[in-house]
Each structure stands twice: as C-alpha cells, then as structure tokens.
Image (cartoon, rainbow, N blue to C red):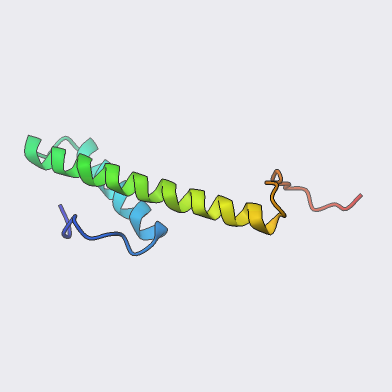
Length: 79
C-alpha cells in the first residue's frame, strides 16, 4: 500500500482518490490477508470522512437556500 494510512486526508478529493485506489487494490486480489484488513480499515475511515464532508456541504447549501434544500434543476429556461 502507498503512504502511511494513519494520516488524515488533506481534503475530500484526496480522500476519494485514496479510497478509489484502495478499492482497486483490494479488488485485484493480490493483497495478503493482513494487508487487506488494514486496507479495509483505512477505507472505512476514508468513507466516514467523505460522508462527513458531504453532510457539511449539504448543510452549507441548506443555509444558503434559507433553510430548505431545493431540488437541482438542469433546465436553464426561465418561464
């Protein structure tokens, strides 16, 4: 596995990138059991971090939308 897994991620994007790398590494089937367990633990930590970051972003959007989360509209027409 790559770098030290005890360090917290720098940001959401780096956490997601590391998580994707861990998944690919585990899916390859080439990790020994102990390394797989360590990778799984790190993946769970990264998943929790990503979920927290997304929840915080959603909360900020709700604040910006005056307390109610609006559905995302893809049409750009103002009728």
